[in-house]
Each structure stands twice: as structure tokens, then as C-alpha cells.
Image (cartoon, rainbow, N blue to C red; front, side, top):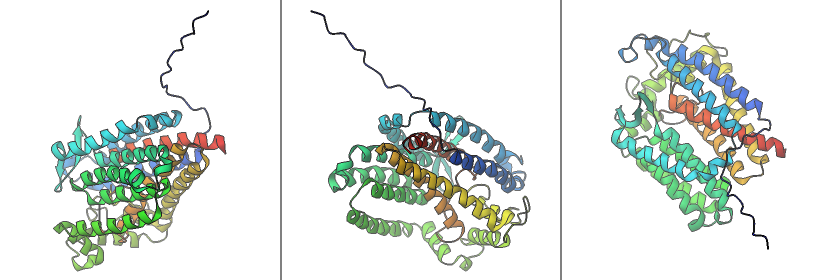
Length: 382
């Protein structure tokens, strides 16, 4: 009698997908990044060559952005070839590392403007909250794809997800970074809706969440000041309303087609954070309303193609992940533009692919790599 042949235990391997990616997403990301380099230099060189913190180097912000863009672009291309399903297997470590980084920043973070939001590693500042919002999103997608039948329940579906969202948002509030916490909460609620959570429970959650946001918004003096600035920035034009007023000047003076590259007036030390959080007003001042709308169209295209992939891919995790990546991008762009146009209280959030900022560039480029990988499957099933 023959002995049964032993079979080797197969270990998970990294698959390289051979299908076609959605090249329109790749093109849109590439164009936004290239335009971002132009705008970072245009918006920052005057300030950079006049401040000690940049060693009076006009290329300070541009050179850093180029380095992070090159690394990010390479990461995007690599991830576009790897099987996105590997992420589902390691969603726990990704989430735990995200939470650990948020805890570490409270103790060893770099203190700036009254907050601890960055960790200095090998001379490079990393913003853990930028990583954590994607870590939370990945964990939620993995959980909801595995527990599809329980998502309409409160105890088995929504409650575990509320703990996941609450842990990340709570740690971010402690930095303090109220705006990022709101973004994380918004992303979490939208994902819960897409994941099949009960609509009535989501409505109740939204009402409770709005109440908490209002309480937190007026619990600190600087937050209450921002709310007042949001309601009437011209009440304190040289104080709390200054930044938003300068944004209005930049947006209004751009006209239809702008003053031309390098001709912004507000970037001449009038607009603070013009190379990062408030780069869009400088962009509109130099390229006009049409330039601003073109950039918004680029983001809208990536969002739409990402949601298209979410609808076409047959794997539930891939579908939720494509939607999650698109939602994170869409929410961040919406918040940034809403702030600089006075539709929301002033806060600091980068404009993906365009604003100066290493962590934001790396995580968004990595997410685009994953999205491109999902589009391979989406096209295969299309």
C-alpha cells in the first residue's frame, strides 16, 4: 500500500499582476504632481530665501518635494504591480503600527505651534496622522469584507468599527489636530455606509458626532477663535481672520486666467503656508479660475475612475479598498478647498500631490499604486 504523498505547505507569495492598469489615473496623478512641483517652487521661493529656518535657500521646499516625489512615484509603480490582496492579510499590523505612531508622537513628537504632530526620524519629519487615516481605512475595508453579513448589526458590525475609528480620531485630537480628527471621522462614516451599516444607526451616529464636534470646537480658545473667524473673518482682519482674508484676495485677483506663473502678490510674505495648506489660492491667483477648475477636474477624474474600479472589481475587499482610497482623496481635497474659500473653519490640510509635504506625498502616492493595482482586476472583469 502506497503511503500518501506529502504536500508542501504553500506560503503566501507576492503576485505581480500582468493586467492593464487604468492609465488615465496614472496620467492624472503624474500631471498633478508635475504641476505641484511648479507651484511649490513658485509659492515658496520668495519666502524660503528670506528666512533662517530654510537657510535662505530658495530651493529648500522644492528640493525636498522632488526627493519625496521620486520615492513616492517609485513606490506607486511597485505597488501597482503587487497583488493588493496581500494588504488584506496584514491589515492588523498596518492598523497597530498606525496607532503606535500616534501614541509615540504624543511623547517624542516635534512640538510646533502648540501641537505635537510630527516625529523626527533620521532628520525627516513624519506626520503619523497622514499614515493613520489610511491604516484605519484599510482595517475597516478588511473587517467589513470579512463580516459582510454582520454589518447591519450594531454589536457585531458598527460597534467594532466605532472603536477602530474612535481610537485613531481620539489620539489625533490629543495632538491636538481637530481638523484631521474630523476628516478621519468623515471617512469612517462614509465607509460604514458603503460597508452595509444600518442607515438609521448612521443617522444617529451623525447627530451624536456633530454634537461632539461642536463641543470640541468651542472647548478650546483657539478653536472658538477659528469658528469666529469662519463666521466673520473681517471682524479681526489683522488677527484670526488674516489668513482667510489673504486667501480671498488671492482667489479674487486671479480672474479667469490668472496673473501668470510667478506673478502672485500674496505669496510675497502676505500669505502664510502658501507652499502647503494654502497653495490653492496662490495657484488660482497665478492661473485663474480656469486653472483652479482644471486641477479640481483632475482630482474628480481620479475619484470617478477609482469608484468605477470599486464597482467593477468582483472581490469585496478590493471594491471597498478602491472606494476607500477614492474617498480619502476626495474628502481631503474637499476640506482643503472648502477651508480656503471660507466654507469651513480655517485648518491645516495638504492638497494631495500639490502641497509641499513629504508624508502626504508618500502615502497618497502609495495609495494610488494600490488603486492602480485594483484597476487591473477591474479591467479584467470589465
